[in-house]
Image (tube, rainbow, N blue to C red; front, side, top):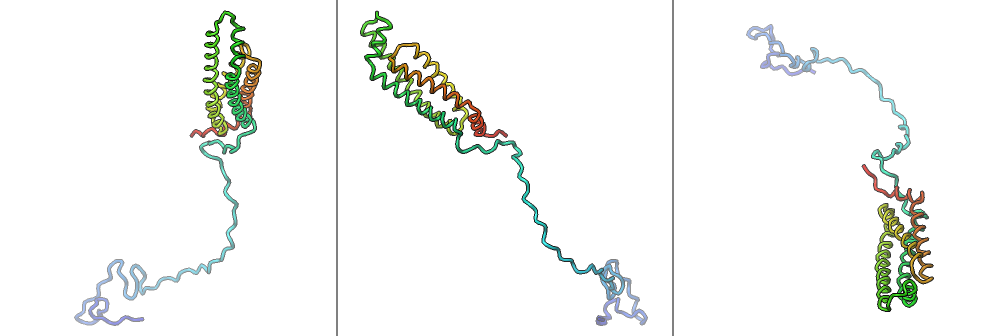
Length: 229
């Protein structure tokens, strides 16, 4: 398609007519007459190669889920929500230990005369006032340590059930003290019933120590331990 003639444009002025200077050559990068900037004269470009119509692809292959890798920080696996049977038995024995301590305290109040007679048998030179004083001291010590052990065992039993390793260590210490106290109770003064209770408490403390030291208990407390990064 031809463009209209414009004598005002230098490229449209006829160079062979007098009075008209020849048209200057186009500047570099300017469009040629009838063409495009930077293109060949006449504005004709070679035809674009025909690559053919795109071939449709089938459905993309389905890949499986990416493999699951462990925690790069090395955290411990998820701990079981329910403690193993060894830990549960230890917790039950800890509550039983509390009940036995309360029973021992009540027995000390109920068997006051028997305890005083036992004190007189061990030392016949004691006066009645001295016997009463010895009984009051023994009763006070029994009540005090009974309450302390009862409160501590209840609190520790709740923490041991949750898998707190520090609570297990403190329980071992208290149970060891209980074992030592049970042995001293067998050698000391007291009624037959008190000595029977001392043996039962001694066996309970030993069982608590053993149950919390078993393999299943160790694995449970290790799994409940917080991970270190």
